[in-house]
Length: 244
Ligand code: 6PG
Image (cartoon, rainbow, N blue to C red; front, side, top):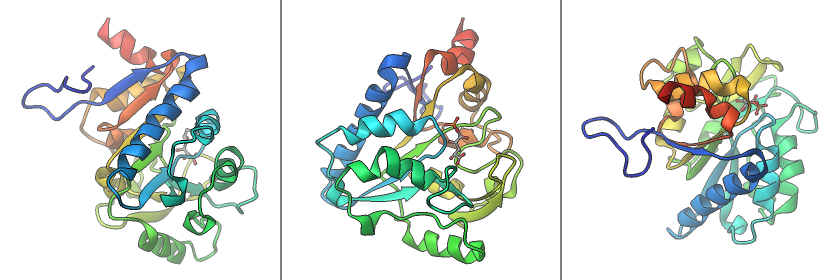
């Protein structure tokens, strides 16, 4: 698999794949994310970090909260997607991020931009959120679903084909169904993407996403091919099998 300096002449730069065993996963993933945030801060402008939802990020966010060399006071927090539930709901990505990271670091609460996916006027809420997003996120964290979704971009859905709007309300197959998500233009403009994936149930989707550049509609995680894919051996096993 290509990585830094491993690009094949004439082809786009391949993804960077990092395989980390269970015990090292959270700390090593957090270290890479922290380094990317420090690199962005060195450019002397406000830093933007968009958080992934789900369950995989939990230990990574706890490890990131222990990194004492991140300029949280200069960092704005966004979300790649959110479920249509209140911010204190057990299924809220915002609540998960607060519990594991945001309540533990000195980020300015005015710079934490929650996606208000529970609002009845979801379309308006999406337009408002779009207005908050920077032109290019410094760091975008993503997960991947077993069938290849990322953020709340699900296979075959219209949002995966979106080329103009940067935030859309969606109704997805993963419960809670009512959601809001960033769209392909946001993934394409992000300066640095990290995809966090653990577990054998992700192996097929990871392999499908990294094997081909084409057709993100059937595998939206392909939109993150240019990122750093931080995998445990089980999530990597489809790739390992392909290369053997
Ligand atoms: C969501 C997430 C979603 C998630 C993947 C992986 O709101 O559901 O943003 O894209 O990252 O489904 O979820 P797990 O980490 O729980 O496997």
